[in-house]
Image (cartoon, rainbow, N blue to C red; front, side, top):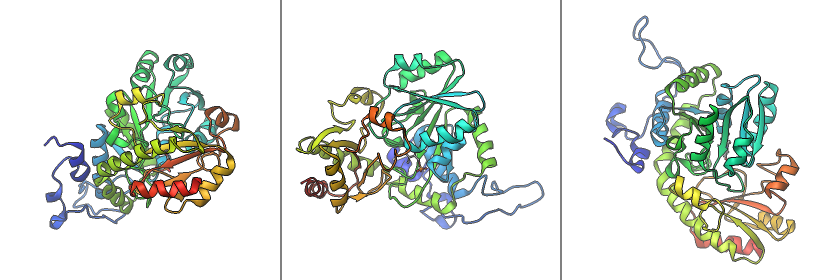
Length: 381
Ligand SMILES: *Cc1c(COP(=O)(O)O)cnc(C)c1O
């Protein structure tokens, strides 16, 4: 049956329930490291858990379906998924990236990748013409985050696909911020989609996970071989937690977005707030492109306040909201990118992007929006 996304989040591709032993409705946690063989050269379908596990397989099948991928591998974190993908590149290769990027991705490019002879450069991918000019002879891939972290810039993925086609590049998209509920980059021409499953997919700030989804069967096969070799796999229990999280992805995404819309407008009216970055505001520079390529605006808001003192005061005064790294969960979190997620980004780059000591990032949860307004209101006073 060709089910809608809400149904697939709960049942995967099938109606699910009949497949588990004893009719278990919830996917059992196959907490085992290995599987017995019924005979010589015969396999139950599972041999050793670094390669595959039934709980993880069900999760991978669900994410594969949500992203419309040919395969999805579940990794121990988002960074593990990015590290796995980087194994496709080597000495002499160049990767061209969005300049506003998750700080951990930048750290991987600048340390692990550079050491292996992979060069990386950053450009404003919201400008397709200048992005194309930045392509070099040895460029192998475009690496995009849209909306970007933390300044919510929107990159036109169809335009990136055209550039990738003209220059024979792979198109990689980190889809963490919108999740497959709101955006499917593979359907817009991406070759690979990355997720930090720790964020919206898991949704409860209780475990780490990552996904690498492939559009092409050839690449998918290569990724599977690397996955088994490197051992960056997700544990059975964590696979269960993410599967459980995904069941409520649609209702969480809707509620978080609803809260974010109200909060973004409210923040814009506050005296001490100078600028609000939210993709769902029609005055946001990326609003229209996002409308064309995604089904929603998500629930990530950044904003600048009038001084560094105000920023610090807000972080220390919030009560319901926590001052913590990470995003996407049911709890609303407030982050100070300059000191946390983007501490390793060069100061001049941070300055250019506007990630100053007055810049805060809010991941809006599913609490009652009036309580969130009340909390931020007293913190901003
Ligand atoms: C958190 C995050 C990552 C890294 O994922 P982990 O699960 O923390 O390893 C990558 N990209 C984005 C956009 C993120 O927010």
